[in-house]
Length: 407
Image (cartoon, rainbow, N blue to C red):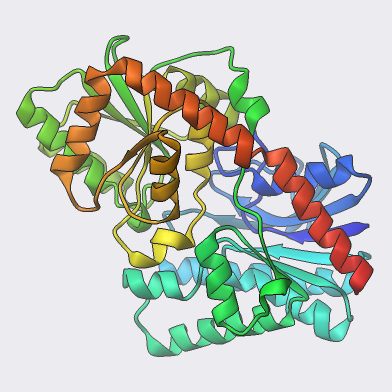
């Protein structure tokens, strides 16, 4: 089976972005299939290609994956118009490959939602099997967050969502809420497969370079957030809790925020103006270095803005990195992850918009390291029992293989 795989933000483990697509592609190759990965140039990623672009594109083999990279540079700090323009350019160039490349199955993964466009063309004009993976529900999320209010734009996005779902022979959702959202748009349940994000156990179980950022002492409780510093992440909640800890005199608890994003400068300015010396900012790091940091951490921070669509409609990479590292997790919004944390006893689920409860959980963690260790062991058991990336990738490969045999 030859898979034509579209993911605009593809990265290898050498980048600081999620590596789901890399691991899925590698697992497909392990099973004897071939993969052509089509992507853009993501600010936090690393495609593995370093030769010069020719007419806006470069191509090469990366760990057995045939990678086609367009010279379309995307950053989380870009404005709405620039991001939209890049998404549309990527989709238009991808249509050309959907017509010119030789393949058996076309697979496309969001975000952005425009990732489905080449699949729509492949389905109706080349009669190719099309499998569409949904990582976030659009336009539901931006509408609830208030970042997109124009009814015309929301209407166009809703139409594209519907067209992508109905054109796909099969859909894959990364969380229970995403599966429900796809079904509400009229797709039969038997045509939707749940394949959540997974744990890269090999990366996070064998760390050789343990490290702590400057400003974090060996005896400090280190709570780490890794990921985008954007509107959706609601990182002001971490600073609010840091303020409470400062007032309580808990200088032994440090919050480390690793990553980049549109709001990072503002967060740093706020921390400086409020003299929050218990908040440490650090640039993004690749997966190997991240594993070394998490091996030294005491707690992983799973934070999002208090938006109901997030409760069951996201499958965050960082949560799975934390539990793969054997880290207990502090989660600050209700939903499927909060329920899992409570059921598995692998961390703390605190109410949203409650800095006192957030700070209370951090103090409990700092004052009872023995219980924290037990929570971390439970997290590692959960990672291996339910979210081993290899097993989930095998399920993903079987879904594509099954669709090819049906189609």
